[in-house]
Image 1 (cartoon, helix red, strand yellow):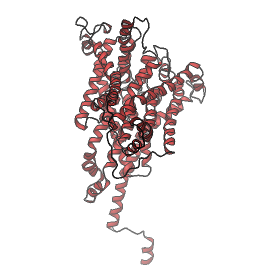
Image 2 (cartoon, one colour):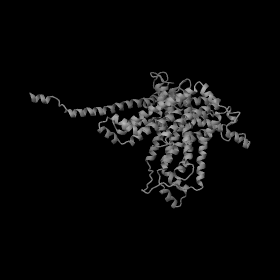
Image 3 (cartoon, helix red, strand yellow):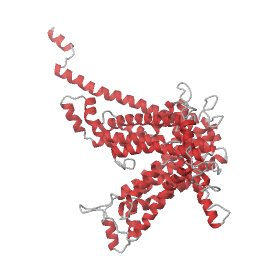
Image 4 (cartoon, one colour):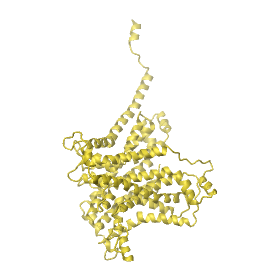
Length: 582
């Protein structure tokens, strides 16, 4: 009897073994719960808006039935097709111009003894900070066909009755976009050139190649992946911009995809047609990223050097001043000239009369600060929307990066993929997706602070994730394991060991997300309501009114807000924190 009883009863683990099972269960369960929560958050921020956008593009506006009528309406008129072609051509020309501007600058800063390298870095940072739509306003004051300073001076000097350069043109749009986007190419190319040894250039010089021939045939081919990456990023940025095409293109009757999408949101709103029209923009973006990877996967770009490999500055002789002049010219066009004319206009009664004592006034700033019914509200909205979005993006990105880097659960890399997915989604497409997903029932978020904050957090999460992932990988897991061996729980080890080590990187990521969110227009323009306007949207509204004096003053306030946070970042993280590549 005792034998039968002993065989029929289940085995009971020893007390020590049972305790070990409970510890393992408790150790795994929080990771699984965290993984499920992150999947839910990323589904809400990324998957569902894009999924809803795709579904809506095939839905009938009234019945909700499956239909292809939205695509027929989106591409049934030649004007709509022309807008798509214009966008692709604008992106190509802008990216090519940015490469022409940035590559010589990057080579001069990285490889030569050109003077004024600190000034060149200041130009790059200034162009990076200056929002494209503000640059467009500055260039209207400079190169407007009738009253722009350049054209006025041109007529006075030559007596000509035509404008030297009309900013309200396709070339004007491409120039403004390139002047704001070249820092992206500069950062990629300079970082790549910093890794190339001088030995190959020396060998080319020994074989008879001059300095510029060695650069063209040796140095630049080695950094071709970086040039291609910069070109693609600028192209994608150009075709998804709204501000510059709206401010410069609409008066010139040049229609592009983003301005056409905006017209679909005029009354009556045709979100189904807008969703169908946005699909090619999304496919083009994803396709270009794939093409870049395939092109670079087929060819190796490696510089082989021994332990003696080093980087030696090239002596350009008198040519160093030519290169400095090129950098100064780009700085003048991208930063100095637009800012100077906007500063002059902001303190003027009438900007076209110049900055004289009779024309000098602070009335534009007084109007914005004390009388305008929306200016201070938009400043507050911008600050707290951007801060909330940056916080959400950094917290979610940090958790995703930790789960993926530490491989706490299977399929952790899928979370990282979702966190980086918005990188290939144009901001205007993301905004339409959020509108389609959350503007209507049951959430009814259209025009609220919540939808803007969530859209910003989703839009700029790749920045936060790239920062967090690099920081987490830099912290060896053995430090956490040592703490856990000594009795610390995982969360306690993260709080006491990992978090302090990555605090600086997280702060840098937060500041960058805040700064780019505070100047975002392409996503905000589709989601704001009457009382949730941001500074960028209010600036666009002012540009339609044509009061460039008040518009310039408000642009100055936006730059003051941005520069305040840039200076905080420089103080805490270093002067190049916005341009650093992790």
